[in-house]
Length: 398
Figure 1 (spheres, rainbow, N blue to C red):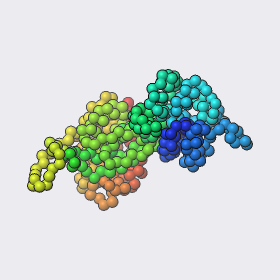
Figure 2: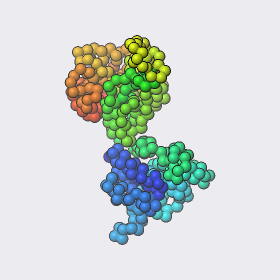
Figure 3: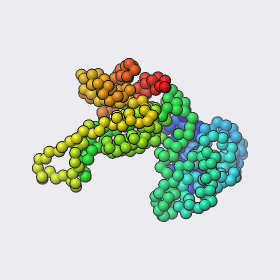
Figure 4: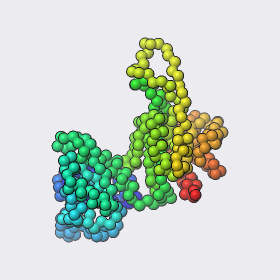
């Protein structure tokens, strides 16, 4: 179990997005206890939350004659996090003032640990001094506010006030939960998926990477207690609950690495970065009626060097896809040439494993002399095995 989360649902039209948040938190191995305001219960049924979370959704302090209300004191002793989604103007004002006049605000007053607020409302309500003052008070008490975004609102207006993406809210929640497991509190950055290098304004040079191995590494690391950020290439589906940052080309990935590598203690560079890109990108769309043509390619900068330049320097794990007959030789040569701390090599010429396949096989070497061989297995299982094999080196670094 990742943690106990009390999900407070306010009575705004964005209440239906709280259903998605409940599902994402459950998928992230959290126990979720829903508490709805009466207004929220008129927009989304409590039964929906009960089915998704496995816990009764509370609406009233007095609705059950045999067991009146929730024991908010007992729940507050066990809960790791209160997230309010959507946090309406009414709820923000009440929470800032200490008002406790329903099941949710009564629980909020008793809650003892982390708080995440995801406001959603009309732009003019959001900008009102009373709401901004309430937010200032709540932030001062330690609440994390996932601010609303610009977009079309329920009343047809366009402006700031739309609920932030559920993935962003879920990631903020997971960041506030206590971390347990062999990788607890380790900051880990993963790159995943292909790059695409523009040939013209329509076509690209790319590769067959599905990004599945990188995503599996990110999920496994998070399940083992690490704080994870995922840099993800085009066409890769990111599961709910992962903090992710998209890139398209190697250049874009390099810029993201410059930002995020200094944050990380460990970087798992699993993205399949193109070795070459067109020296010049053609304007418009190349036309085959022009006849045969020659495209001049140039090497893509080695992004491992971007990672190694980070201060403080993270532990760097590179991934290499090689032919089976040359796998060990080429992988260990890359380990030395790139100045990485470890290399994970996968074969490209064995049937049923590797790119686009659900299975993978790997060989691992570290500068410290550790070596491991992993037989073909699902990428999700392989990811966990790789992480556990390297965990000792990461956790005992000076």
